[in-house]
Image (tube, rainbow over all chains, first blue to last red):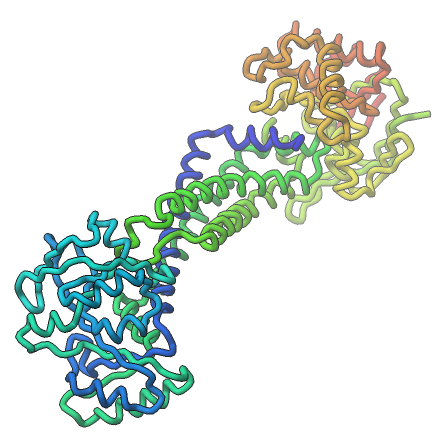
Length: 379
Length: 223
């Protein structure tokens, strides 16, 4: 502690430079923390998909529906416990910018298969009893200020027209990464509204034993291989991962950006420390003359470097944590998106490593400094 | 008994393959409580000799004993600890840290000791009192005159009560009046407080304040 003042006065001797370096590190670590949290959230989204559920969709893509007749045959497959189906609706609420996902589901079979959708019993009954009823995520309710019993009109894009629903139930997701921004309604309503032109977009199958998945997948795809609507069957987790990777290899992208940011900021902070070291050559020589050991000067410079990067890191990381806490607006687009403690810890660790690496060379130079040559240079 | 015994000291600098001798076979003794002025033209090796005696530079060969302790074979870490305990160094250009107050500059050597904050404060104020600057303790170097800065430098050199004080042209950057004050102060430290002093100087008037003067010229000491 008795050396703290010595380190502190060196830190603030060039306030503008120190503040700019701290802010550079803060911006870099804010960016890193945010991007890292995006990856974490997307990974969590893909992991929401169960390994014990299969998704059967058209081999031509999920925008191509499958015949209704597949239902009975899929249900009869050995190892399949239950079957449900769903459709993507793609409606617009007031304005296209109010995007949220809407699914037409066969509620009687869908809800028992998805315990992630937690609905109070009375509301579940009310939803099941009303053909135009809707089951809405709590986050979506909050986002638009909706209430139970309220009517909501969606403008159809795949099947044009005004589609009116009454909110009869609200669900909370468990886990949170399942997302609280979904809008469910009855498939029957869609079927009738489309003049009975609609058929299931995909089927979801509950397996009795997750280990049987490869065998069941092969069997189902083999059955429909030569039909007019061949299928692509995969585990729900693989299906979700496929959805996420439709955005591109986000993990790689984020890692590449993170690495570039790390090295850019490493150069900035290393340059700051080198400049600070050069300015203090004679002062370090004086300290050595007074008897300060080489190792102590090495530690002084390292502490100074780590203080700068840790200060910047804390600003950036906790800034991101404050901005993207639980229930932040970004969860509308990426369910479960928030800065977790593990990301905070990683960010702060990176800040410390940044300080140690950027401070090492000037610290080593201070340690190896020749007093005689340094003082001669001053004279 | 001599406090400092330098015997058969040789220093050679190397530039590429060329050997540049600074001095050869130098013998010198300084008694405890002595005040020696070391004179000589520029490049004669005065400062090099002082630096070797302070443990800041190493000789090519020879021996340097201080208070019965051979310092030439010490490792850098040992030398640093030895310097902190035995050497008070006064620089020509004061070399105060500009970001610290006079008090904090004088306190620096005491940070290496186990003294409490209160004891450090007492020691610093005593040293500041000896050089007559207690009222300037909170001033930064830029707020002091050259003479005052050098007095702070002297306070820093004596605050840890070292075995000897080594002064490298302590009046070289001062006007005549300030130089005289500094020399009077060094004389007082020697006579009143019994400090052993070795002072490198160009100035014959400054050297007159010492008990003895030695000339170093072309690598040879002349008494």
